[in-house]
Length: 206
Image (tube, rainbow, N blue to C red):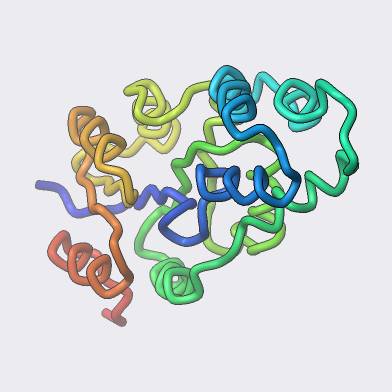
């Protein structure tokens, strides 16, 4: 098996909190006193287009929240959405150590809507860690669709067996393995460090 030379990282649940997941939406329902069932129904109908970059944040909000008069503004709701993104400091510290070795090409492989993704890149200075961002909002396809893995491998010109996807969701990893990639399921940083070391990936000086 070839040596690993490329690491693909999920963002939400690995190095940051999730951007706009069920917990975040549940908090929004409580804070803004939304009809939870109707909001979730509308969210599910808009989700693919939103995360594949075919629907802007303003249009998403128009369809899911502001299809009727509200007592709060669009900007207040957007601010709430962005505030749901928080860092995992231990993950970012380990990611930084791996990046500084310069032994591995580093890329994201994540599902995220355009505006939230770019907020996260700016706010958490993700350009310091990653050379390229394979985000669903740029590629027009989401994990676990096999196409997103194939696109990432083609653009990086990386052989599947020389790559590792780090993700916290089993289905995403299952589909990556079917594309020939190696995988590590993220649970915590110590476990990630141990599992990557088994694949020959370390942040140690050599």
